[in-house]
Image (cartoon, rainbow, N blue to C red):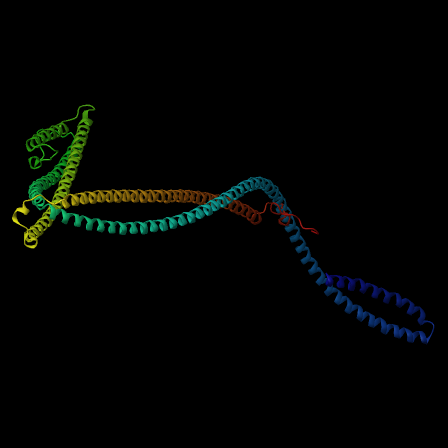
Length: 531
């Protein structure tokens, strides 16, 4: 533009200079007639005119050049102007399309704003639920603290119970020591009384020894009978176990045959034998508490029933009768299982009887050993008494007739003393039994009381722990659901934003005709000030 302006100024300046020169020439010619001075001035004017002509020619050449440059610049500017006008028309069409898309985007923005309001309401509800869950969690934490405090109290109670139990054990040990001392004193007193009685009643001791020997022999016979019965019970127990094993094998065999018959029932094969019997049926004899003949008869009957069931399963089924053989087989299997359970119960009862017989035999043997010890002790005491009686005549030197005389009056006093001592011993034994009963009862009450208390605390702690576990599980479930809902909301918002961004990008890349891209703005955008 600057070049064009300069060229125009040069063009406008050139005619003015030529006009001035032409105007000056008449004045010079008019003045030349006045004299030589005028000639000199005319010569000067001619030279000036020549110089001006030269300047005009140079200016005209420069003006021509400048006009050519101006024409070229004008043509270029005209082409640019036409191109700018075409671009402006395209931009106007694109702006129109952008305005239409903007109106559609505004409608979409309103819809999205409505959806955003709904989502915000849902988010508020979720936040309220989260606050409620936090409140519930705090309540659970408080309950957990209370449960822990109660657990600590329970531990303190258990420690106190242990201390009391130790005190009771110490008391029981002291009582046992006192009881042992009482037993020793009673044993010493009984030994003294026994020795005095042996010395006084040597003949009675001999009779007691004979009686104890007879009782020992009777106990020996009883022990032998119990041992024999125990051996019989053991043999019967072994036989029952063998029968149980055989019955188990028979049961497995019958179950296999029943499974095979049930599998063959739906096929309804015509070539299956009707009188087929399970192989090896005579090799099993299940024992259910009956004799051998009864068991054999039962096995034969079971085999016949099994054959009948197999024949019914092999026969072709008419109509809906094909479901009967499996039902009968299942019923028979239930019967066999019931018989097997009865056999196991009878076997357990026989085992208990055998254990009872064995315990009785052990008690009889222990009693026989105690009787042997007592008989040996009485025999030794009797020998001592005999030796003392044999040595008494030599020491006393009494006449023969005095030996047959009745005992002196001191024997009655000794019998009274013995009776008094027996009463004292009986009283001490009664007191000891009372003390033992009271100790056992007190200890049992204390143990039962504290065991019940400890068990109650343990149950309460367990209930609280279960409640805490359930509440924690519920909190975890609510938290998981809350996180899932948050993820869904965030995903929905993200997808919505992605769709909006993609729509905006598509609108920018594919503008409508007549719309100005500079006029397009996304939903919710504001126009800055000063634009």
